[in-house]
Length: 190
Length: 190
DNA sequence: ATGGAAAAGTGATTTAGGTCACTTTTAGCT
DNA sequence: AGCTAAAAGTGACCTAAATCACTTTTCCAT
Image (tube, rainbow over all chains, first blue to last red):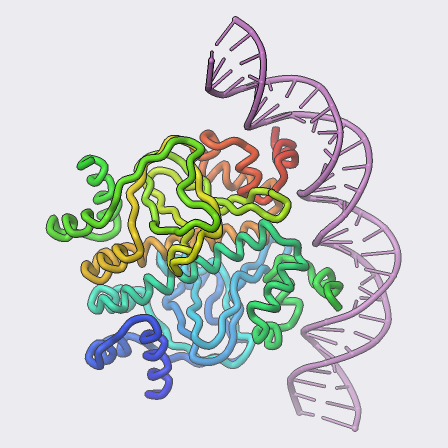
């Protein structure tokens, strides 16, 4: 477990510095969790008690519309944070599903603990501030790509941006992430 | 000016508490700026020296594609923050335009000053962390709406969510925000 | 108040991408 | 290795929304 916590510390220290004392305080606020492929991290209607840092593995966050169609909000793998941020923040029942595409391991942080470490250790507040900012920028670019690009160029763009992801994920899920039908995606580039 | 700064303080204190001493330190890091309708706050290729809190007025943030078509990333009015966050964060030339739809006033915060007040006053780091998190959640919902909803229901949704905005903004800009052509929007609901 | 420009509305046509139905390929299991 | 199920590919057809061309309305600035 210490080696896994070490990875998390490195993740923090890519952005801010922590003393050993601070880190010992911070790390005590995380819980470990391990799930197999196909198991759920978050489900619609269930409480969302944590946000999750992914030690290893791969998950998809998605919602299901009235017609039963799946729409992928995010893929998340090693070093990514994932949650139903909205439900988590407001401590409301989940509005999306998150499940594992591979066997995965997580460090779990509750809202209470997050606020505790943020107000206790300013560097942590700054870490999450900067992280959240990066996330915001990424989402803005995704919105822009949905507004400005054709389905095909969104696909090419993703191929360039996250080539490793595409190899780990079935194409029909990529399609759902891009907002295109499976059939249409399959007719691209070829 | 003091009354305008007071509005900004209220904006901070909706989320975190600040002592008078902290506030005096924080406020000294903002600059005031005033622009007329049609003037630019940010332009493609120009340095993005600030992020802006809007005291009064209304702006649009948008990018222009190869065909000269405008795609609106964000409308921002009183109490909103706006910038080219990506360029600002990386201190690179602007990638979008931001201009005024109405005469507007701003408080401007440079990256250096933002980091200064965040690392000096932890409450400020927490303020931006929480704000940024809210922004993230909003963008996620917009992405979901682009993936799951038809153009028409996106319009209805916006009408419900921001009725005041729609009255202040020409419909063709709303269309561009929703990712629909002006003509198609004009055929909705009627 | 009035002339000009921007915004909004509308009809005709085109098109990107969706849907449906079916086949082929690939990947996991015992 | 062999069987099953999920994933991927493909053809035929359909539809939401884009585009183009033009008219009407609204908004300002002199």
